[in-house]
Length: 515
Image 1 (cartoon, one colour):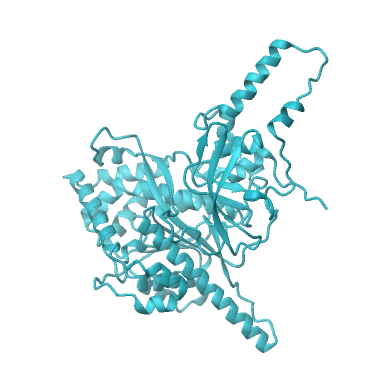
Image 2 (cartoon, rainbow, N blue to C red; image 1 turned 120 degrees about the horizontal axis):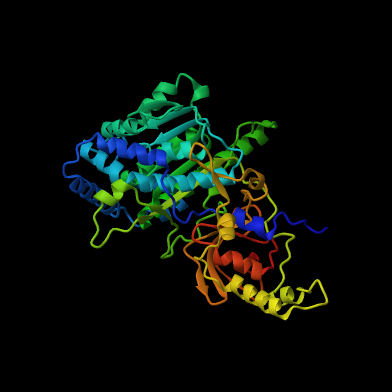
């Protein structure tokens, strides 16, 4: 029985587009930052920003002292790796954190770093919203909240959804800065701040029904905890507090990617082990005790739940979000030359969800694509009278359509790549009439484009991380080549795809590159 196609060439582009070319910080956050900085002392602000940057560099250098064998030990025997890890003798409210924010550093963070962190988190959470359209969190935990970048991103991505937000931030200076930024906002959710995760768990321990959170996020904080043992302990605690989705975000550096990879391996291993134990107990008891939501799978960026195919290679998984610099960034950031009006924020992330990965039909199943020669041969004129001049015009338009540079976006392409509207609250949302049919599901049929595509003449080369089976238990990293002559429509889509977008695949096992 033939499989009916789920997508058209147009909706396929909409579903695959996950990246944003240049994000503009919302007017609400811009105004809040300007008002906050106007109330602070501006003495030596550029020196404060430079001092904060040096502090981040010190943490990065300290983290490089971790043993190189950590990742291998973690995958082979996570418990053994926990026992052998050496604890750093630098104790803070996080456990083993490397930076305490002073008052001037918190102000410098708001002025220089917060817009970039917010843009990266907005990008990550927007994809979670697109991939899980029925998910709208009401109770949220933000660990390492800082000045509230994640809170601002969540309010933009899910406007009006949040009801209760727990913030964990040990730095009183960062807490005061975060509260100063939101003091003029209306219709805020209920917000409670804690200085440690222990304080939070102690407060909610009496009410077990209120222990779980729909969404838990920890952004740009695990890198401040050099001890692998403490990282694993922390992430396990966060996962225990998660009802549905857990999001981890780190800077887009080799070390940040390593941290995300380690936590990804451990969560998947731990939940697989737990599920196996429950299944064995159910068999022994001859009854079904699998009433709880068991298992875990990756929502994004990984299209599979197997070992990372980039392990033991020189490459590392990360992404980049370009943002338009805010006035405070243009004013206080230093540069050897003229300061550009934009900057690129590199980041790594992983989003877990409780449950099992759904088995969905692969997006290219049932779709048939014509070659360039077939498309030209099928262009039969409607009338017998042939207008030679219009025929030549049509051929020129055909050539231009497939040879124009991908960065020159027409109004129609902009609609296809973004297909978004801005609602009254300033949040970006997908058009209601196209959202359902253009949504990329959580099945294994969507690969992830890692790094920028290579455009060489009439061919495009994509580096894609993809699943190799319908269950999503194994994955691979492959170079996919799309040519204009063999598949003009996919070639057109490939030329407009960028780093971080999805790529549709076909489920036939004998099909090269699963195309």
